[in-house]
Amino acid sequence: MRPILASENRSLLRQYAWSKVLLAFDFDGTLAPIVADRDRARMRDSTHRLLKLVASLYPCIVVSGRARADVLRRLDGVRLRLVIGNHGLEPMRASGDFVRTVRRWVAMLSARLRGLPGVDIEDKRLSLAIHYRRSRRKKQALAAIREASAELAGARAIEGKLVVNLLPPNAPHKGLAVQRARDSLCCDTALYVGDDDTDEDVFSLKEPGQLLGIRVGVSSESSAPYFIRGQAQIDTLLLELARLRAKSGPVQGAAP
Image (cartoon, rainbow, N blue to C red; front, side, top):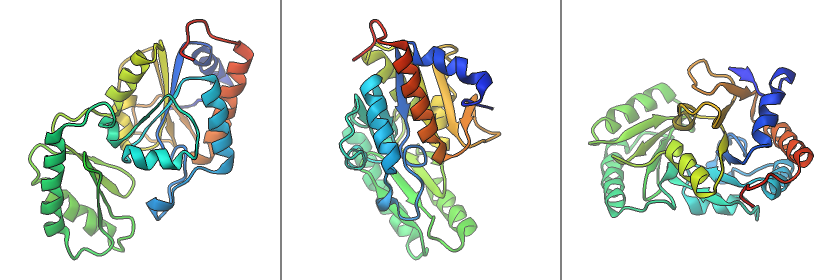
C-alpha cells in the first residue's frame, strides 16, 4: 500500500480528479470517526464543510453498512447524488425475501446470544450487524457470534471493527453498488475511500485505470493499493480533491 497524499502519488490523484470521476465514501471510520456509541457518530464540522464543497464539484455518493435513512440524517444537509445503505441493498433492491430472512435470523440470534453482556444485535431489515464493542470479553463474544452465525443458512458474514455484519444470500455488495452508481451517473472512473473489511468488496474489483481504492489506515491484508494514514486525514484528502477540480475547470461530459 502506498500513501495517496505523498508527493509521488499526487499525479495519480490529479489524473482521477480531472476525469469524469465518481467520488464514493464509506461513512463510519471514513467521513465520521468511529465512536463507542454508534448512535452518536457524526462528521466533524470541518469534514462536513469540505464534503459539501467537494459535492458541489464532483458527483459524490456515500455507500454505508448503515440503513439508508440512518445515514441520511447524519449528513446534515449535504446534498449527494446517491446515498446507498445496507452494504448496497438500499435503495437499489428491496427484496421481501431478504426482509423475511433477516427477521428469522434476528429471532435465532437473539435466543443464542441472550445473556452475553455488551453484545447488541442491530436489525436493519435487509441486513443485520452484531456489535460487541461494549463487551469486556471481546474474544469470547466474537467466538460466540461466529458460532451462532455459522448456523444461519447462506449468511455472508463480514467481520469489521468490533462488529460482525450478516448479509442474506445473493445480496448485492458495496463493490456492485459503486459500479452501478458509476454507470448510472455517466462517470468513467470512480474513487472510493473506506476503512473496513466491508469495503474490500470495492477494493478487490479488478478495474485498472477505472477504480482508485483508498483505505483509511494501513492493512497488509487489504486489496486497496493506496491509503490515508487515519480518519483525521480525510479532511486533507477532501481539500486536495477540491483544489484539483478547481484547477481543472469543468470536465466535459461529467455528471453535474
